[in-house]
Length: 93
Ligand SMILES: [Zn+2]
Image 1 (cartoon, rainbow, N blue to C red):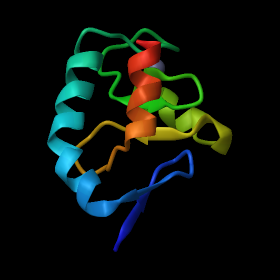
Image 2: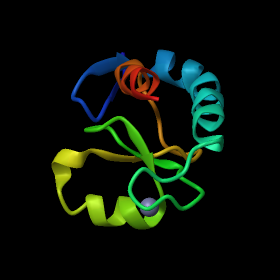
Image 3: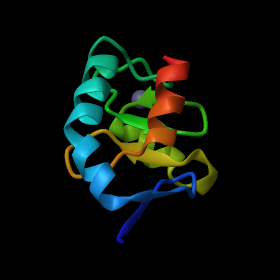
């Protein structure tokens, strides 16, 4: 079996993650569509900091990325999302 690891270090069946991909990205888009960047209030907050469970813009994401503990992640198409990461975003938004 092949695995996919979340930014939180949890291990999932890659096939399950691939199956959930569309659903997760659709959910994320709905969540950030009406939100502004948590840090600078600009639009297009389509990155997240999993440490806070908040959406941020790409500029703020780049700054936050200097500290790995912020666990920066993009909501864009090529990034795989995992159940534990989704849970954080849903609980905080
Ligand atoms: Zn920002």
